[in-house]
Length: 197
View 1 (cartoon, rainbow, N blue to C red):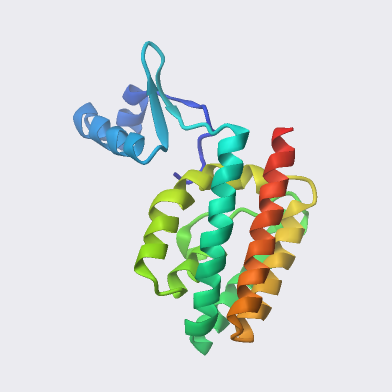
View 2 (view 1 turned 90 degrees about the vertical axis):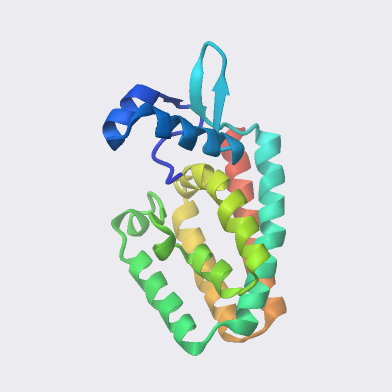
């Protein structure tokens, strides 16, 4: 789920069980759960592979993400404390220090704790919105965010867009914050679509 395996990559149950130090029974149950969340696919006579989305399905998911995450940002603008905003600002400064970002190679956020979007989604305070984005859509799209973050010129633009979102959040203007987030997600979707063409 962290994007270590590329979409379509084959997963060896035996090798995975050994590397995780678990027996194959619990591993198969975990794989079934991942299948239920559409993160992996099992094909007869082929085995288990990391889920792969068609360009159309990926674009559709990004449109849904744009709407939901825009709403999350609107709510966060109204609900984030000054301390939350300061932590988000520090996070962006930490991101700016990443060598890959400085070099314009990639803008990859490794964990949820260090993920700009995740923090805003949580700050929305809406349990259903958080569940829809974090426990469903976000994990599926995380596989593709890495590809987008490495597109030529996208890393620095994404960071600048994050800065604009933070500035909008600081105004406490939900409309402004939602507009900034939606523009950012639309740009990410465009980058992903270009990567497929």
